[in-house]
Image (cartoon, rainbow, N blue to C red; front, side):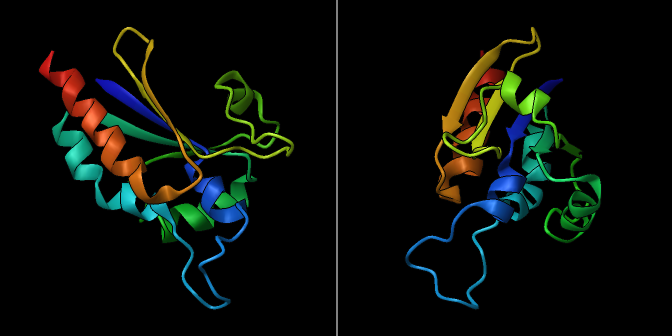
Length: 135
């Protein structure tokens, strides 16, 4: 089964600086919730979602159950070992960046999408998974 490693998508929603268009009190653009809502579509395409964050396990547990509706696992990587291995550390900061990867059955990265704006991560990543399953 193909795996989707949504590296730091969750941390990106927790720790990224607010976008200029947002005002205090506005809902944060949590694409982790969007991935949770699309879990069935990823499963239908033969993929498994995995989230990664530099947050501690306590913070992630609360975030995972609320934002992700416990629909996919989220791994804690407070030492940034895995996040660094995936070259997903935000430049100039010691936190993870917002990057989505599609990893094929052979363990090789077949798609990477880097954008701090969360809007296109689910759409682009799901599209890459569907294109991979058509091959």
